Image 1: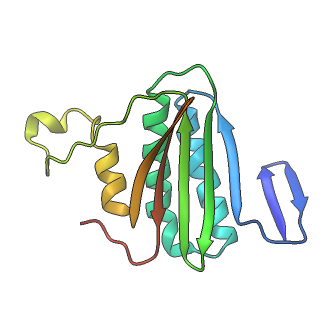
Image 2: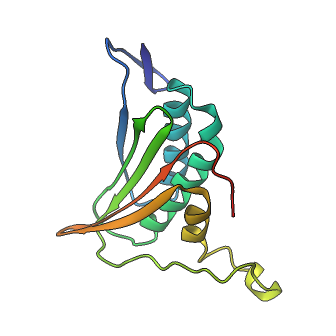
Length: 151
């Protein structure tokens, strides 16, 4: 198996990878980098049905982490847990819990603001998700499997 870690770097492996990890700066570009890694990982596992939802979930989780403005790098991983189950994790240095806004469809005034619904998207697209606090911040994770459609 050949895994392309960056567009110019190829690594040959004897065993297929079941986990991809990265560290990103607290910058808007981190969301794009996470989308690229999710797409590459799921394509390598031939889990094409999960790509769209997983890319969106990863982007939302990373965007939330970037908005904490911590000074450390944020951690990102995608792991294949089973035949068709993946887990996306984003770790940041903030102990502040993200806010889950479940207000249904936004009103006309609320549509002007693109913020505040990231975890609602994660909740709707994931099989399950959660938050784990630790001494140096938190990890927000989501598990996805085929067949999950927005509620």
